[in-house]
Image: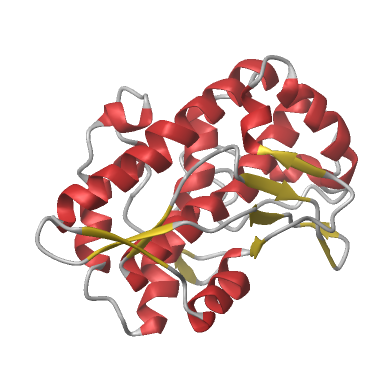
Length: 252
């Protein structure tokens, strides 16, 4: 396999910015956190102290769950680049930041790469290249991050992984088909579903575990993939509204 460094085109970067909340360069946000710092002892709770109010909760487990939902867009950016553009973003927690950003009053942070470094697979051996990217993204970054968040905020790793995977499913089922450049998307998604559980530091592969069949939910008049865990969203709003995929909401 031959690998070459490459760059994102203007169109590709713009697509990631519009669909994956990606930003590149220095921060203009007053509240930014480097992902590497969240791996340090005590850093998760310290950061949650700064965002709990924005998330509408005073509970660390609830805030941590919402945080991993937002961080699901890091996986979206990395996997979208791989499957749509045949390019992989270099995953380095020292180079990746989470910048506070608000959209109509909702805390929807941006995923910021201080610098963009990319590789492109140019010949045979793409599956090995993909495996290296999976290892870098999941085993190298999400596993230690989820372990630290689960430990400090006392929240289930299953919940945190499902929060991430729901955005991965959204990417492969909704976003990539719209691009009409899905040459590798199907095989990439299947490779993720078939990956060994060790990639995620779990007894079972969470990508496969949470990928259940969609069922018709009469209340929503739609086919929905019902969550297996509750993300605690209902604890972040005064009305107690639940996600459309909530296992307590979707009685079939």
